[in-house]
Length: 621
Image (tube, rainbow, N blue to C red; front, side, top):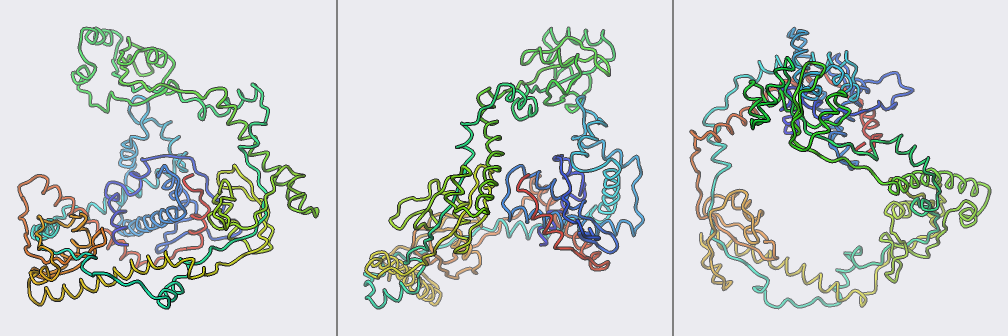
């Protein structure tokens, strides 16, 4: 928990809120999860409350910032991180308020203007871009300014708490010594060959072993099931669409079908057309655009605008800029704020889906809608008393009966009877109770509808001993060898520690004593793997340890040397590391402060509301 909070606190000094928000802005709606309840408080610290709208907004922005589909567990983890971060910030806000710290309008405005996500095409703060961005993230301008004000005030306090902290030099040296400690070892490898022949188990032992591991030596559970199905991929090719419908689909979803050409814009502004023409002449004479920018004392951020599409520019600039070749420089162009020269630093071609591609997508969309109608018709037919098979025929679904299927979609003879073996269908089959006839349900990709009825369940049953004898014997021998080899390693390690040497152990094994190279905490190979190295680092000098290797052997190793390199205190990299680690420790002070405030003021979490918000979130959407 402390490490998680430490990670959250890293962003506090720079900005516990704005830094994360500036990464991405997306459209989110607030889930109506608190209808019927008069209390929409997700948590409170003291009298400072955070409602479900604020939590949902931050949670959904955090999920979208992952830019990938998330599992339910990952979504829950993000929900917990957001909750912890918001509670930390709220506790610190309470402390800020108690100290009477505030932020001026000028300081808040300065911080907002510094966020690059709010820059317009010319590279500076653009109020329209700002409004679009915060509205997409779920904020009104007033809300965003208020949150920013808290952020600035909180930053003042944290700079006082953490500012100037320096990690003690001896502490830094100790950490460096620990992290960079090197060790050497001598070792002997204990192989299964040292055991000699291990006799196979008799029938009584083998039967007991099989009985103790029924999951390995039993038939799987089989289920007799009837199900009906409809698939969008099957329906789509037969759906007729007109060219007019295809064009309407393109016009209504241009962003999905047409990717406009993007160009990387570099632009220098001039006060007059004459100045711009003089600069263009210099460029035509061989001067580079970067050199011109340097000559005019422009920083990269002042003239390297970034990727734009035609719609990002006014008509005059768009026409001139998008007519240039890659690397081309425009003639002077009159813009809203003066005359400009534009340089094409890079061209990323646009693309558009073909007529046939759009047709196939539109057919699938219509098929998905049609599947809903078909599944509803099936449900009505069943309610009218028709059997699954008759209801399927009437509605247009496919009826399938399986005499026996296991969780892999296989029949008792090993053949595939569920093809394709849709995981959601299999999961539903093995979750259902015998005799239940469920309603049609869509799969998560919306491309299938299924309805099932489990007509019988054949539970797993142990296979006859003769049927599993070879497999059970092989597994028993493998486990027995590991057991015996481990016992031998334990005994030989005790002998090595008693004799303070590996010589007698090596002689008994007929194996050489080998010497390791210099080891560090990250060393890992087939013999001296992570388990062996970890045990060696946990042992004092001269102590012998044992651990399994990656290839089924055991190693008995003895620490033969320990070295602690001195830190390169004059090295800039070392100094940066000490500084960064000092920042980590200073963050612990912030965490301790926030925890103390929470304990002083009291905190309360509506976990049901948290779970409802997180649970109702679509993965990655």
